[in-house]
Length: 146
Image 1: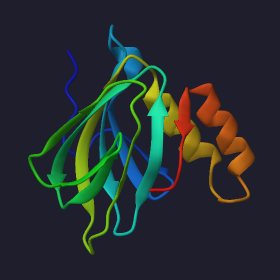
Image 2: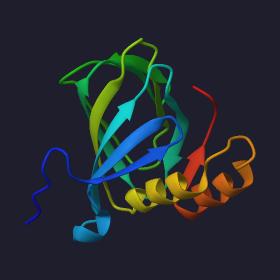
Image 3: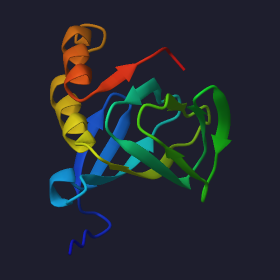
Image 4: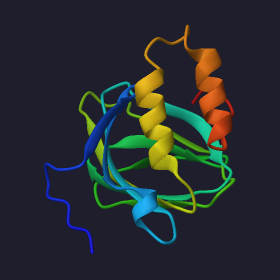
């Protein structure tokens, strides 16, 4: 059993987003990772795919535009989105308020990806070669800007 209180977890800055890791994939027999994500106004993750992980989003606060496959739509509090492995997805916060969501993945170590990105990627575009290596290592493929 794992209990993580509201202010607990490992916080890491990954590009524009603040991620709080609540459950590491190594703690789960099915490699489930659970995080909260805060996306500032203008913050985004470009469309990408995961080789291994299926990913779910549950919107807590604010709103953001999501792309899943060729569809684009706005998600708001209490909306839920599930993305299977290999499916193109990304998001952007077009609002003037932060967006906050709960995300969990099953089937890979995306939490380790977040930790490595937060530790090593500080200056884009100068860090793009190293970012490319990290993306490849964790089976994440960026497709195009959102």
